[in-house]
Image (cartoon, rainbow, N blue to C red):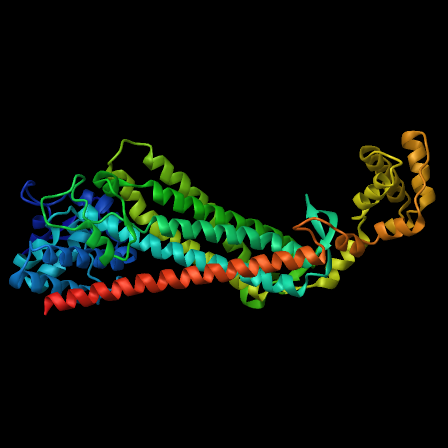
Length: 515
């Protein structure tokens, strides 16, 4: 094979071969400009390792369907399948990808031709454009990534539920604006992060199911005259249904925007958790500590233990938001544009890889945190977090409406703060004086009722509503989380087994036809 060297305007050197020129088809004269290779082909080929497995399955299913449909037989059929099975064994990061050939499909075709000859390799594009191979590969790659994201998010919820069960009765205070708010429990605080993680997992599962609609066999965008059974192709690829309209199948992109949005929402929840936990881990709060394995030492200050994992979690959230914005910008063109998948072929697999890594990191951080219930309780008892409960007692007595009771307690709190006294110094007499100052009349509160309202642990336990910090509500929520975790695990196991079985069946059928 003849070759020559060509430099583009960049410093990168590309080798141009006869294979490249063959890949350009008979319509074009000569080879691609070095600038085109450097600016476009190299970028496309860089996506290849992440798409490699999906591209291989797409090619194998297409070849099997050609043979089963009766359009390909004989020596070329067996050689094509044999060659594709050989390529399937090459790891994506070890395959000889060559940007000068144009893209990953052309690299695979060139390697296939080297192994089985031009006659057999020439059938790889029968009835489909190269973009169909990429569409199928992207869909399969994204589907696997969505399931992996799902599993990592479920891992987060499971870790939070484990800690919440152990601390469901441990006194704490909720925070709003980073200020102590109302009495609650440590377990109740933790479950506030578990439920979003479960919703995020459900969104990932829905994306996985949407990606289970096959786009294979659509031809250019209106089908083809080849005997390619789209239903059979879907079965070979482990898909449950079809994207029915051929052009929609060839160019559908909204499923990826939904997936990227789901990833960004999950990343936002993880970022919120990271922000909160970094504050909770500070010396000033001291509510929890990250494991050493998730921390980093300062290069300058020996005393520091930096919660480094939380910074990585927050950074990925920013990238995930930018990925959604980038996808929307590129999609603001006409339909059926190559621009869309120039972006999506690289963005989606990369975004999912990062999302999976960070979601697993978050689950690991949550699994390894050391909670400090005694510090939670100390803050709850030192802060006047029972003021709303005192106002409730006043209003429930029937002597004041709630808004007036709120103002009375606010006046009493202000006087205690000004005097430098704790919440325990609030007495029925002080409340009566505050009521007279605010409303012009006094109120009468029993000392026992006020004492109970001033006890944050009693307040946290006295909540009546579903989802509250009471023991009954906590037990109910933990039961809900356990049930959802079990359901998610069953779904993931079934999806994984179904897809693995489909891949095994495809490879077995390809081997059978290549014998």
